[in-house]
Every structure is written in C-alpha cells, then in structure tokens.
Length: 182
Image (cartoon, rainbow, N blue to C red; front, side, top):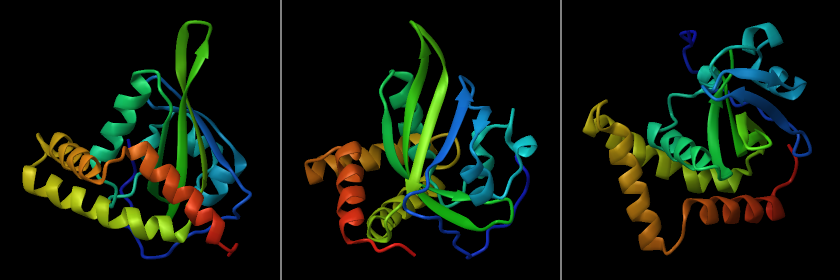
C-alpha cells in the first residue's frame, strides 16, 4: 500500500548526466531500482522492491497522463513523457521518462523506465497542461477523470498539430540545448 505522504514545495534535483532506472513486472510492481532512483526518491531498495511504482506518484500528476502511458506501453510501444514524482519526504522531482516493454522472445515480462532530469523550460511548458488536466479530472469526478483529461489532451494536441510524443521530445531536446547544470 502506498504510504500517506504530505507533499512539500521542495524540489530535488540530480545531475543531467545521471539516469534513474527502474524495472517493473506487468502489474507495475518494482523489480529493480538503481542507486540514483533510491537516492533521489529517498527510498531504500527494501522499500521499493515488490511495491507499486506509483509509490513515487505526485498528486500534481493527472491520472490521464498515466492512462496515456499505460495505453501506449500495453500496445507494445515505447512511451516518452514528463512526470512529476514525489520522494519519501514529500519533496518533488521532475523527470523526462522513457518507458519500454521488457521482452524475452515473444513474452512480455514487464517494463523498463529510464529517466533523466527534466529541463526547467520543458517543465514550464508541461506543468500548465497537467494542471488543466487535473482541473478537468476534479470536475469530471473519479469515474470519468482519466477519460475526460485524456480527451482534453488529445483535442489540445490535435489543435496544435502534434502528438504527445512529438511535443515532449521537442520540449526535452530544446531544453537540453539551453539548460545549464544545477
């Protein structure tokens, strides 16, 4: 069960060259966490292994974003996106995530997630989108939250003439060109 943690307004940063890596089974339970993940999220290996990956889910993240992630990886495609996570102390950290299917031959075993520090200008661009998705989710209620915010996101992206993947990749690479290490 996910621990009840009160979010703080303290940001945790990590070096641009550091990579957070985790692996889950098909149900999203963590089967591997690298040392960077443990340090940044402030959890021990024992705290993480066998636990749902949403242990680091920040309440500022819309459910629709995770529905988009799961829909994508369950089709066998890789997913790219920005995620605001929460540490064991309630602090937050933003990542640019790449989630891929872990296969052994034709058998799907689980999922890998590789995450880098999200560039500040990318966060500035994606945070208002997520905030609007959260507003829509609250208005729609729990039963329809995911569908409502994901529908809004789809319409917004269509109006912009892009896809979520194209948008986040563009934001990430633009941000890396102008970002100076903390």
